[in-house]
Length: 290
Length: 312
Image 1 (cartoon, rainbow over the protein chains, first blue to last red):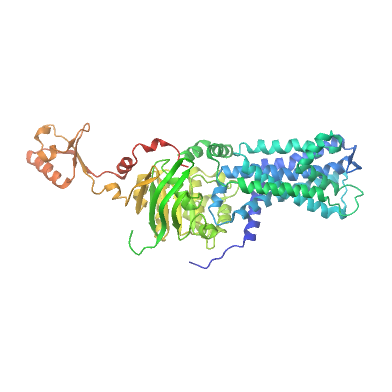
Image 2 (cartoon, chains in turn green, blue):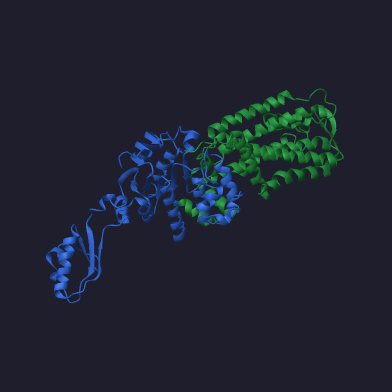
């Protein structure tokens, strides 16, 4: 045997991230939902509410100063959670995960690659929201709370990626994935202060929202962009709640995540998924049936 | 298996149950290094389950398994560096090109083949920069094969490598497998096609109902080489069955148009038959002598079981 030249795992990880991002870039539908969907909300809500002020963290702030960080969180969650659930369950149905499992690539490197790519794309999306927010709507950034904002963003990305993998472990197939992902996240956005501060809703609804990590994410991240914050702007309690959800997500994911297409449903979905992409459902499905 | 050849795959008493259902019921297998071994069996026979246990995709319920000296379940990356898996139903990142996918996967292995070399080997040169989603079914199977060998493995698992191929694509794949064999690779092949097993395999095992029901070379499987021969010919118009020599008459089996004679000793039977025909001035039209084909043996061994349904 010739001398082994193993590629370092860090290099493999970076390469996985790069290829996953490339795959994302070449899929216009995914790019649309991740970038343009939040962008449309940003532009639309600023057009509707741009002259209003809202009460956030006990302060009266301009609408866009509240809304830009909130919609940035929404954009990040769309990538790290919703997209991760959909693309990973699709890859599982198509047998891509199974193929990778049969190679020497350590499982965690592959998964970290997928997560890393969604975090990267999510951060791009956050950056776009702020570029538009600052340029078009006069959003102000505060250097002394920026470290808190970045830490919050990374904790939130980790939390929602872990939850995404947990949900991927629980959904039966890629046909169910978009429904489950959207049904779990979209209602939460309304009780978590993404589109308007939670303070304006009934108390029970506020309490309900506080159970879940999204409200804490929006709150902790938004706090770093609230004028007149003294100190570094870390919201320890919010970060703690997010981290607890993240750990819970990891536990569920490690318990339920599988690399193989799921029995009958998965097989059907695989044929359907190929059909959607290639228009060759018949031959592909027939082949996998025999 | 020759003495002295090292063993690549050693399986003793392998069992696998899914709840109440026992998919694999005590399989013994031994495959030497450099051997091409074919597993034949109808759907639901336990073929795919067995192969997936060997690949490390599935834990076993009971039995001893050693592949290249590893227990597949615990072998981890060190084991997977030395095997290549070509499964039927594994997807490929559809937005990447053929070259990108191979570049990505070859980096997982300590001493991979060059991407361009593998692309040429499987005949995808023209599709080098094409996204994998644009490939035809046959081209995708060839990319599957390329991904299975890009790590230059010692052992290749081929799960029905030519299902859905046209005849010329199948011939090309056979050549490729022959190339792998001449490089000293061990190959475990599953297939539905008897001609494929006949053409490629050094040895064949037939699985039915979770057990190995026969094992041997394609020539000797199920007693093929010693089984009764079938002699067929058309009875000359001027002759009656009763005119035939006694040795021939004794073996006649009813079978429509041609006269069909079963015999343990085709040499003596032909001698009697042709001596009789020449002596009387008859020509024996459509005269043939046949041993049972691999397919005949396979169908006899697996009985009606192919109706039982899906395996994987």
